[in-house]
Image (cartoon, rainbow, N blue to C red; front, side, top):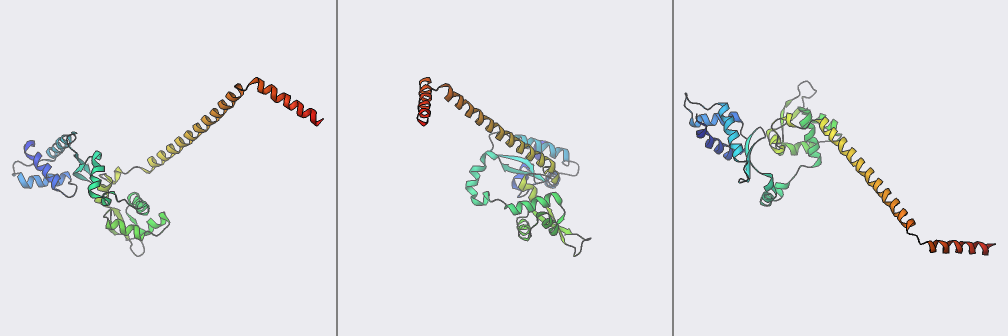
Length: 237
């Protein structure tokens, strides 16, 4: 099938979808809508069409773009316009997760599949409320039960909405723990070096001021001080 034929249909599908569309889904929908048995759209054609659409909306003329996020393709506004759009949605647009919810979500993301008791063991506190909120926001899902544990507790994993929320396509896109630790060490080293530099500069500045004051002392004033000291010593005798 000609690329020029399927391009507008793929654009329309992505635009109309309320969730990210995977390439396999796009291929299926296009074939159901247009294809005949002898002329079907291929995965390579869909991939080429998506690249063409993506390049089109990278132009500064458009305030939105087509990107792969959350495991599929979708239209998203460009970051330059986020502040303007936030005025339309108000607090809903700016609402963020609590620290407790973020900590719980991070544990699930890196340890999944994981039970609630395992999460609490890592956090050291009860996490019923945080888990419930994450389920309500559809950032995590119940993926089954841990059959080999007493009571067969529920196990939790991240959802497709989680990937969409954080702009990643798979859990492999999460930053590696070692990378985060290395960045923290580098930041701590930078701050330590910065503080040392400031202290050295302050000491140098104080030394310069002292030397400047000594160099600018009036000789007559020094002689007067010495005479005054001698007179006081004579009086004491």
